[in-house]
Image 1: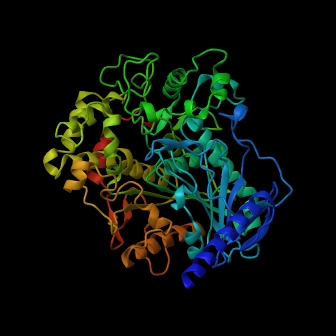
Image 2 (image 1 turned 180 degrees about the horizontal axis):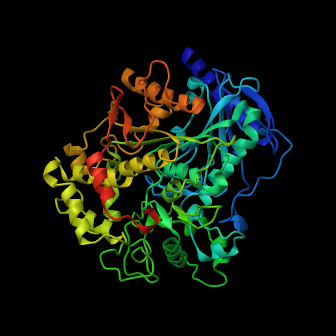
Image 3 (image 1 turned 60 degrees about the vertical axis):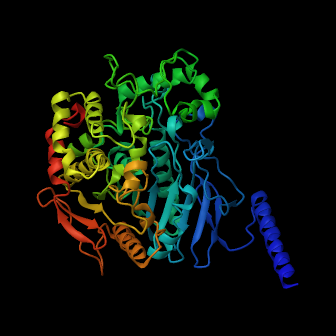
Length: 594
């Protein structure tokens, strides 16, 4: 009888919860744990309050659905509403993308919504600092919720800051560059639609966050990977001026020549891409693209990830760098250097709405945005020790003829691939790269490639970015994340060497679970979560990450070259990756970066 009672009670609870969901979805009524109704500039919204008093609002529109004629257009302000919007149920309206595990499309094109997390301490009388998250995912995957990984409830209530997180368009829908887009745009901008979405979410915050108990003059943007690179782009894109006061770039910088695309090359690839999906050049191309089904207009990963060659029209995802003939584009015909992993990214479109130049060049010229009050920004740059370990399993898709597990000769293929995409590099530079990372210095071929790739793509760009922006009088901090969590695998181990296990070493993105207070398997993991969360939130509140009980984090400048290492014990160091980064700096620069 007690067992039957338990089952009946459980069924009753399920039925009650189902009724609540149905009622809340079909009406403007909140039924339990209701947060306050907040009046935004477009209409009232109501969130859900948890047991600790933190209110979470999900699914607030910050732009019109980018459908039909608005596909590949700058985001437009959403329509107003009168009834209270129940921002209580949907954790995410993730944008269309491929589930890389299941190999199927998820998300939807109507995705420009954001979430807000408000601790009980944040009120109109006592406004809190605001942290606005920009997620990573190589500009092709990700969302502001990401299956709970970016749920900011714990972070917000533990550190007493408001967190805002919005979605942005991904893949071809967010970043495709075409001459036709440039020609139809009033200001000549093209591509960068995901970047514009990020900015629209920041503009929403400036207009509305005070009503939630936030301070619009104390907004910190922070992002990881693609989100970190995007953060730097907002540092210099003129249209983002005055939208935030501080910035944190986790594994993303301002000096990534392969992760910020030049205009001509991006448009050449875009033209091939549009043709490949069925919309060749001509007067009806944009109509064709905007009427196409979502599954047909995005990267055809499911069928093309393994790269079927010798197709007509040519497959833009086949890497022909070893045999491509000369082209007016800097890219071998016509694929970006890290495709299909990074087939789309921000484009230097030459406009103030987008990117007039590469961010590194704009920073060196002193063209850096300012805060809402006109003050200089403050920034944090950081990198993880073994960034490239996460991507080893994808290397055969990026570089022709590479095999897993890596052979000794595969480093030569990496060096040749680098030089084939660089205007000013050739056989001499390829040989120099091999000399800088001699095989005998590393336990495995995996580790040799991890070291070289981490330096080239992440660590050295982080150092260069910190040097260039600090030289302009911007308060700058730099870190290296090296904490080995409870599930750590040595990247030189047999497991990692033979299987290219994706979560080896202190991999790309390893710090994110600590930032969002999700790593709690042990006291040591909880301690690291508290340390990194305290540094980040102090920075958001004061522009300075330091505080009681923390190791003093020194301000960065090129002369002292100081950083902190976030490891078992937080320490201050100097000369992060100095020898190898000095080597990369000695090689000829791409002309936009000189």
